[in-house]
Image (tube, rainbow, N blue to C red; front, top):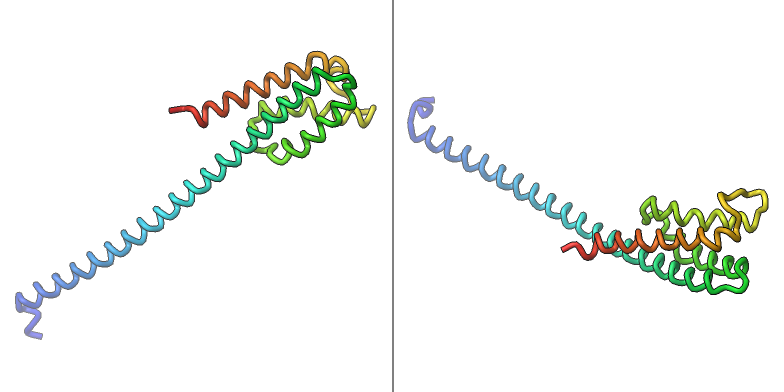
Amino acid sequence: MSFLSEPWFWTGTFGVLGGTIGSILTLVGTITKQRMDSLHQLNVERLKVYEKDILEANKSLYQFVSKAFDQIFESGEPRKDYLVLMKSFHEKVTPHYLLYPSEVREQLDKFEQHYMALGDNAFVTDMPFEEFMRSGAFKALNAVQELIEKRTDRVYHSY
């Protein structure tokens, strides 16, 4: 064991240990960086998909609002036209319902409540159907249109 007292032994040992530890730290750092980059890329892809879904939801809702303005306020038979409109609502708007902010859902709930009240006389709404068609629907549609436009502007036009 006389080589333990030799300086060349300790110089070589610390050199090998230092190189090994440095290699291990480099390997761990590289693996960590790759994992973080892949998680970041996954989050970016999720955000892209989410924004695409939001855009599709906003487009569907905007089409519904435009159709509602045309059908409700130029209608000869309000009840019949409202039922047709709500069929469109259930096909185009309801699948995206959870993507809308609570203020939009609150306004859309008014349409759903009056739709349910037409089918069930026991269902009570905050105003009669005729009054809703004269003023409440217009206010709710304007509110939805304004909220969706603001949301779209905030997401897609904030440079």
